[in-house]
Length: 98
Image (cartoon, rainbow, N blue to C red; front, side, top):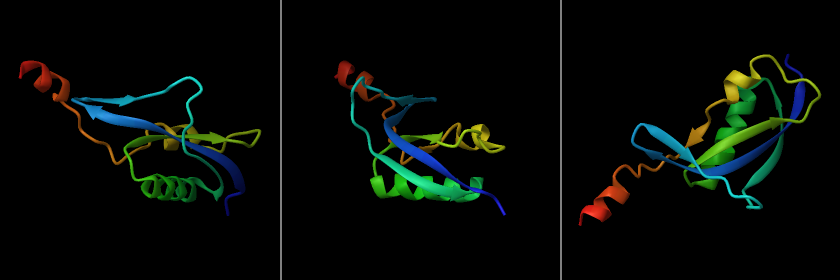
């Protein structure tokens, strides 16, 4: 059985722009955060997904392990956690062409 560890999740605004995913950060901005405990990577991803779906907006989830050592597979499992991505492809170009 995997050891239960503490994590902190922060959701940053994100959207899809063509082939790219754009994440927006603002200095001193406030973003939804939550501290959780999870046992194993599957449990962690399930809890992150639940938090992001409750948030409901397009976002990137940044997960920080609060334990002294990260569990095996942490970096790979949490590298690209995007949820509810809104596609803004061509929205700025369409406005300029009109």
